[in-house]
Length: 447
Image 1 (spheres, rainbow, N blue to C red):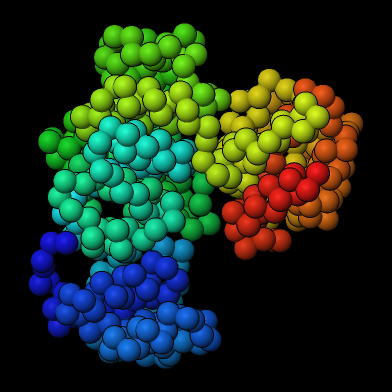
Image 2: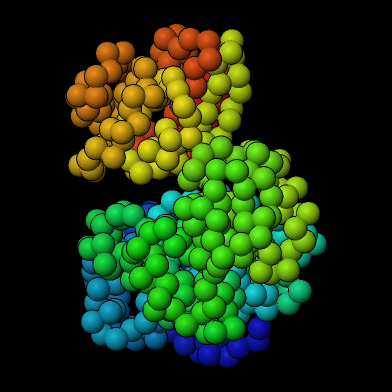
């Protein structure tokens, strides 16, 4: 960990506990800051250990006049919005508001390889990590994928690399953050309830490359004008990726092969992971791995064996010639569209969840692959109407994932793909998409 003194004696408020808040509080205290933690929960198992370290922990709400204490910095949980009263007051008062990703950048001895995008972040991050690992580059993995970045960065050594999955929420709370290699997979309308507008969402994503310089690298989706326009503003060396056929610049693919600066790299038939959306992830991860000096054999080894991350088009098992896939991480229509695109059909689709009022129209071109659909959650009624408008007659209602899985198995036929790809967030019934996916996996195993 880099020895820095900029936090020595500074008053820092950590807003929101959870994993990232606890990690940030411990690190800041270790670096000499006077740390206060505030969370609305009445109690938290991290509170006691933090208090023993000398951290003031305030639980059960936000005390009136909390900001009157003269904080120099706020480090907030990424999920806390900027219209939160304390955050908005801090911004108006000129107090910096960070996420723990900024701390990770400031202290890390190891170079950071950041991955962002509306979809594909987890798969790309995981692919890149495995490529670097097999290639002998001693990588670590952190960020939105599950482990707080600052916790990993505190113990990282200079000969390692940290592959970080970065959400727009995390990137919005950065100031100096500058990864050695940045990957931007795609940009679609998402999280507008958090950011307010699509432009604000895009600007938050742009923070992954905003501070990069010509000796850094930005790998970006050249097939998306919105991403390409942002990339044009970056000062980094640019490596585009495209699925539009062989290209002389960057990494590209046609129906048969993958190319690196116009030269054939490998046959697409050697890639295990299905789907056009996954090919985007594969191209970007491969470009990053090769740029970082990873041997081609290591890249090929991963691509021929990697079958997907948990909850993202994850193959669960085959039963009576039906193949079950868990795509619980598909919390929007775009992700479900990508999943449907990956399977020729026939598909028995399990879909539904939290109703944010989003349209399902993006799915229409691919609903011809769906023979039966099982709907659940708050959006069940809207999904039923949508499926009817698509000409689907096999529509079934379920109370929960377990019942939906039983129904799907019952109406499926030999050769079918049974696909959980909800197109909605999980929070109406489950605390996370991981819990929802795990329930599906267990239900499949019981069958």
